[in-house]
Image 1 (cartoon, helix red, strand yellow):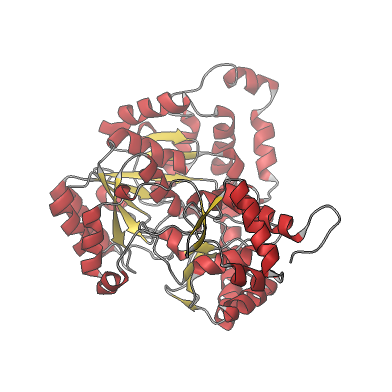
Image 2 (tube, helix red, strand yellow):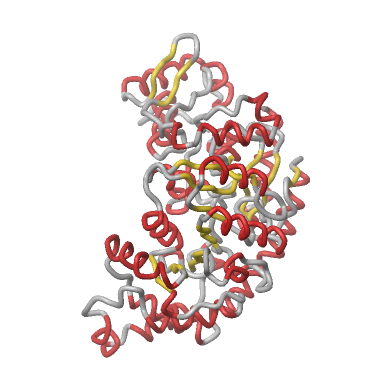
Length: 480
């Protein structure tokens, strides 16, 4: 709560709080600030203090006042034409409730990049329910420093650090990855593997190689907020495909194919973000049939492979890397700061994808790639992943109990790292209230291409075992 100090008035503290959220995109362009009366009640201050704070924000050019409507965050938002107009019609037809809601593009208080910023520097020292990574203490190991020491001897440094590495990435790591993928029934030679600066970089390489501005891309909805934003920034036309328990909505995909002839489909087959759903063999088979019939490629993002059962259905395993491209990385399970990812592609695309990598980064750091190869070959990564899975299972059980006790329901059976929770209230507004208490949420609107208001939120099972968070959550939720 705000408190009087000798250095700052209450109005200055309040305006500073809003200014920081606007600059870090926790309040996105177009967002409406709480009314003066509402803000005064929430912050425990007088209406005159709120008026003074809003005046300061106006003076800084961060907000604008709209007559009879309130105060809104300034700056132009991403043009809505990046979301295909006819896609809106198709989804509305598939979901009549959305017709009544109008399915209009909305601005949301928390932006996609705000979640990334939250990973780098949390809004407080409390466990953050909206983050997309494991807590740092879960990832602490003794073998990572050992791996780095092994590859940073004087002899090793002279061998590979004083010149550029291989364009496709360290051959030793690519060989290790080829063997590791075989355990997932994805058969790929080292020559089909390209290392990248994380999995997001791999997705970007694929997009820049296969697509041009204005192309249609099918992406699962709800889906990864960053992927929507990244594709939109490249000028792609997004076709949201509803994600069901068994896989994507095949009827919607078929209609998109007939009307728009999309070039690409981006899918998280295993432990889908945010629902935790896993693709079934039957659905996977029909997706591949559509791809063959309508000539589009598939990017399979398997970021959560390290915490998933090896027998999980993967499109790349069924397709044999004909129309599919496999993407994964190690930030989630091992070392976020190392930024080591990779993609696996059909042989015919490898040179084109490598060229795109070279234009963006030249090569990737051989030192960390060699260290990672050692971790894989020595079985250290496998054992570490098993420990994480065991710990996550226990955390998930505790988090589910706390969420249910707080009045939430699960829109999908709890699985993997994330829970898709229905709170019963507008999570955009809830997220702003929780920020006042130091908690960063991931509201449901972020996971929809249309950015429509939602009562859902994504929680991280590893960071929502804190009873204090759920106590604050319950109090705020009851006031809404």
